[in-house]
Length: 269
Image 1 (cartoon, rainbow, N blue to C red):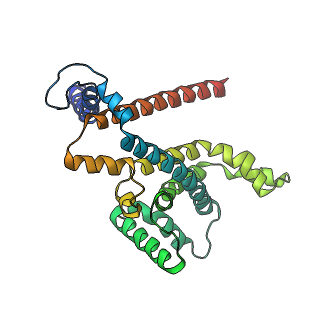
Image 2: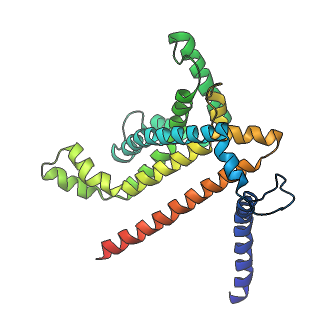
Image 3: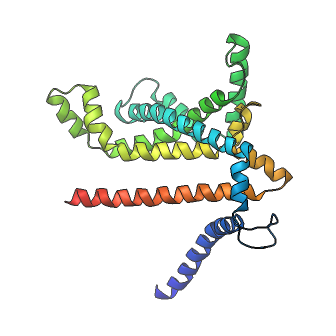
């Protein structure tokens, strides 16, 4: 067993290098004074200044953040309700169909989902006049639709591990169902809710295919801008923006780990 450990360590190191070396290279190139990625001419912040003055790129990034925040919140509400129904309502008529409809976005190709939503919005516009044009609203609705499925799975898995006797004891003592949910169930599934929201936020921020189908001329998200830029050639402003996003994610991860350790220490006391 000991003889295999060096090979396992080597394989693990190669895997991490394959994942993180490109990210490190991207961060390094964001400080390159040259526009070419093949030559290093010196350390510079010129591309961060250029990013600050690039209104189109900054607007696309802010739009993606706004859509992701609203979509994650909407997906959290719908996904929590769906997960609660699947975990607590037992067998009911139509449960299999409801479960299949909730899980469908998980296995459905994004191209099919985007095309079906596009046809839906076009049909609604012809039938009732809404939406008047595709844009931020249609992208947000589309992201809520498929991100809610991921939240439902996370919440349902967490509810399956929660002891129902706690809720039953509270109801035996006279607590109403909504009171039980708010004072007992909700705090117990709070980590799952936070994980589901972050997952939905990441999926919305990263989505390209569905946003391309449901967007209009006035709404261009950050993935759409990056994908369009790849056809003409990547610019160092994109490297600078990616570096800022990596820094924000890294800080968020360290804060989450720190808060988790503080919470664990408080629970032990």
